[in-house]
Length: 265
Length: 265
DNA sequence: CGGGGCGTTGACTGAGATCAATTATGGTGG
DNA sequence: CCACCATAATTGATCTCAGTCAACGCCCCG
Image (cartoon, helix red, strand yellow):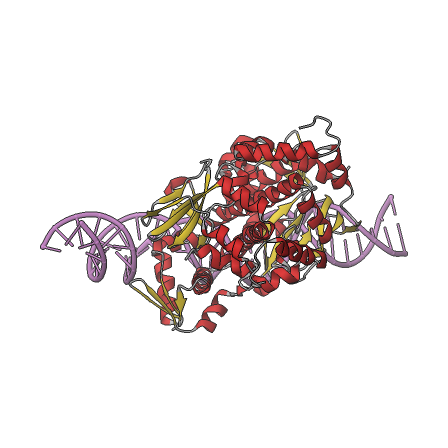
């Protein structure tokens, strides 16, 4: 099942018609291996990319071979949704694990945002949530020490994985190496290693081979000053309350125009 | 003149009709003094805020009274455009200087984004440019030392000020204190002071009272690894190229539907 | 079973934080 | 026009978190 549908259902209830549209957005799909770039800085893609499975990151290459990871993305995320309006990529996107990538032509993006107002609104909302995550990322790496930064990032990965059904019981398949973590939080790989050991010795986490266990979620949240609010994970409520009354009216009017409405809304 | 119009003209050529709409988006306006909050974290505003004059910042309050500044905004920017879709604010917005703020009801935002497709597209594009600036901000504070961070931020402030007509001849009215600068780049105020002195002694800048002179722009750009591409300052070209052919067709079709088209497009 | 990436450890170094004073500066009221 | 006060800038001394360099062990995969 297309993970995009599950995600959009969170943002707005879907009609059968709309679900059908989302089920067929991809013109094709392919696999990439860990470490491979999906889109490169400076390119002017003619397609967007939908993550079907796996984990990817956006990053900017910096002088000296280093890179700064800007955000993580999980199944159901449109990796470069902004590209159909902005043109040239201002960053690269790379697979952290083996991933399955769906290709969505820009023309399809245009058709959806213009032809299906409620889907369009959901896509725009999603981009804004994405921006909210960037803001939180800044706060995380701006004024916090290594311990707090890593604790926060672990919380984010766990919560977002859980939201897409990839984690439960305080347990996740861990998608990144210590080097990746270093690029994400802006500290050296060596210090990442030491900080992880500290988190282990404090009884907050257990991380070995490719599995992370969170042993003390409350403690970890406290250590990272983590508050999941910025992820807007329950946005069907939020989105509705956010709409001024006449918007809600409009949405409902639009919905009722759809031929078959199976009463999902 | 409404600085929003100038800005939107950069993103897309405007018809007289569209200009008129933009000229009357504000239901009212008011002044705020430096240091005052315009919108607070957690609020659910029923209006957006347009910056008419002055400089503001978004920020997140952190434990211990510190704050992390997330971005700067200049005249013509809609400060909290995301609020009409996301609902609760995930950060605060505060005036760095005395500012004039226009109030745009969410209902107006909805009318524009739904009733004027080209304006809507320009507004969405603008939000994406905003997100691009957040990504650059992450790269700036993530993997760079104090010297580079501050050099980069100075470049951004100069270039963006110039783009809205507030700077020329390598000279800007400087909007922030050293404490603000510290909150922006994530280093201590004391170290900001020392770093500024270094930049002065290197002959890159002169900064006193409230005026910044850039003495060696090339050197400053090099020091901050600054490339203005991420600001998408010439987006009328970019936006057009970014559009798939049928989008352009659509835009043109839409434009021609507008009663009076003075051939601006 | 061999090799290469990844994780781990130790020793040393350094950029930047913190603490604590002191000196401009600009806005205000007398 | 000047005294005054709060805010901002500056300076010095000390300390610490995190970076760097370098070596070694481990584990996974071919």
